Image (cartoon, rainbow, N blue to C red; front, side, top):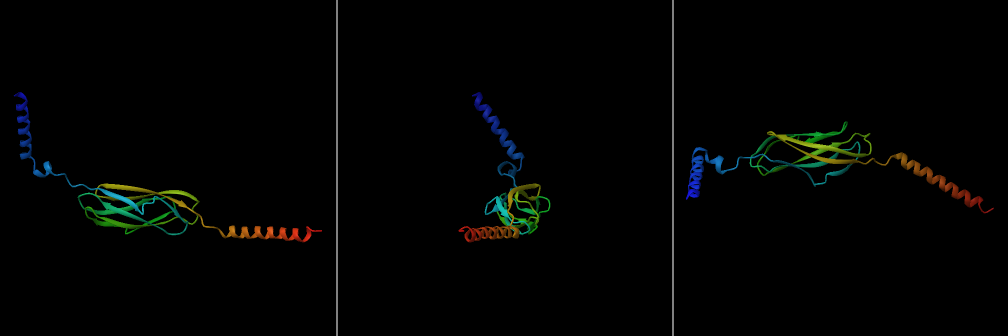
Length: 169
């Protein structure tokens, strides 16, 4: 008997709260902003050549239930690198929609061979998302490498000719 009175009292309290609060705050979830970044085709490790423009594709997805406006794009890159977004910002991105952005990355022509991390950043409406990628700089084959190989081949050919001509005596 006492247990049923407690349940009856709790039920009255909950019904009273439902009458006081607007229905949207009790029954529905509030609108949310959820920004997702991903690289297409999904490789977070890419080879780049110094001094040349390299293109990555960044997908910006609104996984929330509220449209997002004025999405600003920026990057955190090593010194001397140039990173440009096309377009530079996204004015409007509706709920459950996405947009692809071209990211042009140009390492300096004197970039040393190795791996470099670049952070791509999207900011809008109080939310900030960062995605990182690793770029491996591959230097192009220098003309001096080919000249050195040619000189080595001439020297080896000279030794062979000298051996064949004077080695039989």
